[in-house]
Amino acid sequence: MKKFIVSARPKQIVKNFVIFIPIIFTLDQWSVNELSSILANSFLCFLALSSASIIGYQANDLIDKNFDKKHPSKKLRPIANNEIAIREIFIFIIIFLILGIIFSLIVNFYILILFFSYITLSFLYSYQLKNFIMLDSISITFFYIIRMIAGAYSITLSISIWLYILTFLSTLFIILIKRISESKSGDFRNKNIVSFYKEISNSKVFTLLLINIFSYSIYSILEIINLERNIIFGLTIIFFSMGIIRYFGVTKNSTLGESPESIILRDKIIQFSVFSYVITVFISEIY
Image 1 (cartoon, one colour):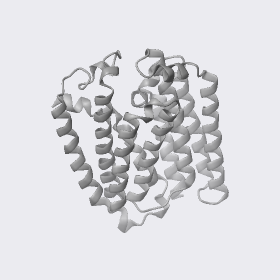
Image 2 (spheres, one colour):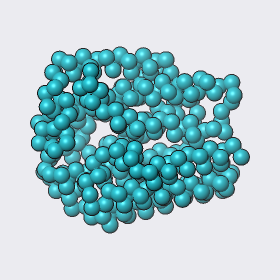
Image 3 (tube, rainbow, N blue to C red):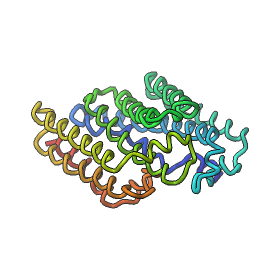
C-alpha cells in the first residue's frame, strides 16, 4: 500500500488547492442557504481533480521511467525503481479514473468535462509537449487554469478574468524556476531543453517576478476603483509580493525549486504570506 501512496505524490496535493480560489473571491456572492452545497461541491471537485492529477503522475512516471532512474531523487519513485508492476499501475489508474468520474458527476457535467480535459492534457504533456522548449513550461500553466475553471464551475459562480491571467503568470514563474533547478541537477531530460533553461539568468526570472507583482497590483487597484473590493484589499499586494519575492530568494542559485510543494509546506514566511493574504481577502469582502 505504501508504494501506491508514494506514487500518488501526496505532497503535490497542495497544487489542487487552486480549486478553492474561486470560493475565496466570491464570498460576497454566497447565500446562507447555499453555503453547505457550495462547500461540498468545491470539495468534491477537489477530489475529482486530485484523482485526475494522480492518474497524470502515474502516466508521466511510466513514460519517464528511464530518465527518472538517472535522477538522484526521482530514481526512488516506486515506478522508476520497479516497485510497482505495469499491471498494478493500470489497475491503480483505473481505480482513480472511476473515482474521478463519480466525484465529477456528483458535482455537475462541466466538472466531468474538465476532469477528462485534465487527463488528456496530462497524456499530451507526458508524451509530447514536455519535449518542446518553453512549451513544456507553458503547458503546465494550463493544468492550473483547468483547476481554476473547475473550481468556478463547481460553485457555479463567476470570477474575474484577471484571476486566470494571474494564475498563468504566477504558475509560469514557479515552473520556470523548477525547470532551471532541474537543469542544475544534470541532463536527465532532453539535452536541448536542459541547455535552454541553464542559459536563463536570475535577472530574467526576476523580471517575470516584477511582471507578476505589477499585474497583481493593477488587478487589486482596479477591483478597488470599480468598487468590487474595499480599500483593505489593497493590503493583499503586500502579502502577494512578500510571498513571491520570498520564493525567488529561497530558490535563487539553488536546486530547491525542483519541489515547489516542499518549499510551500516548509517555509514559514511563505506560509505567513499566504495565510495573511487569505485573511485579508476575507476581511475585504465581509466589510
